[in-house]
Image (cartoon, rainbow, N blue to C red):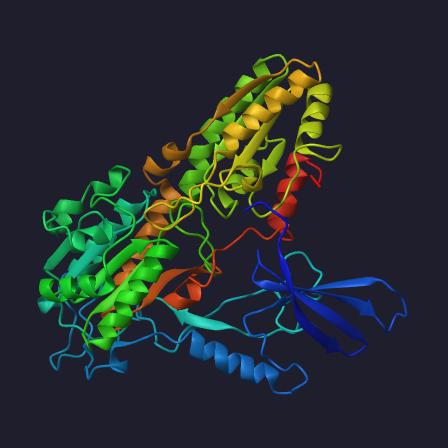
Length: 525
């Protein structure tokens, strides 16, 4: 929510001539550390951003970096079927060389094609070596901002697989809300499964609900069935929030004799999928649970981007452009657009940047005040005085402290938010009426229009890649993983690492600085 981040004192860190007091900032994944530089003999305040992933590290230990990397490797190792059951690999049936699996007479895959990914391949998670912890967007592990390599597993087809394709029954389920690209992912999972030789593919209707609502039958899937579903928005299988007891879901998985389950959803869905994975391990089932991250808000940790986000930003342009035309055409016109973003303002920030017409961008991560000499309303006065109109773009989760809390939650357990768009509309109207200045406020809320559209070209490509890699990961024997893009490369990540928290816009990042430069807005404090 858009409020000043709360802080707890988290101890102190000494580094050479600097002594830093550290506070845990609840709205980020870092410690904010402040102190005074003794070496310069000044009282200049030093601010450092230090990762809190490993607060137990002793930086005075010369081997702390090795300790960090070893622990990181354990955290990001991928759960595998071999961990709990005795399963032997076999040569892959996936090949692009032929319409049938390309094998030698002895059954091994020919070495002439180098399209497979080695299990030891890794992708560097972070690529910037920050020279200073005060650099924009700096995310440091120790007070000196040392460079520490962090590697994650590369995604893609393997030479060895752990399922016999002709005996595999694979299921696909889409959970949560709608998002552009769901049908693209479903389609590509089916196409890739068939490429391996899988014949028995089913869709589970309406999210996890499809596992226990008896009237929701399985939907047989094939390339013929899904061939054109990507031409429309929504989900071919339907969606729903919430779900049944995990044990009941796994009972259903066993009863249906599923060997693979592909789960499309956001953080809450990932948490549910991980619980299903753990229950399958507990029962020693040869079932692979693989997620594809779906969130229109782009708020999943570690990933460059999630599918549907680009399409949402593009669709938001229509609303912003309409609001701009309305505001520009009216006398003292003020256009107000509310966009999606419960906890994270990525859509609002990127839509404002791409538009180039937005004067004020308000997101949950950056607190703002409405009244007073430095408030949003005073800046709107300035815009009306200087240019004659204004355009405001606000994320749905911004400014919730100004609204009455209902304490109600939706089926996914998310807090039901107050409508900041309507509140702002009323505040703007009453403010200008109070100061005796005419205003013409036009409010546009395109929320569900962003979710229901067909994926654009950029998202369609991302969905295709994610769907393929999900299938490759399942056949490689991994379970309890999700697939995504890190630093432009496709990777597999263990689910627990991506659901630790929501990903937020960093107010110290270059992208937010670029947005502020574009809008020209001041700090609303």
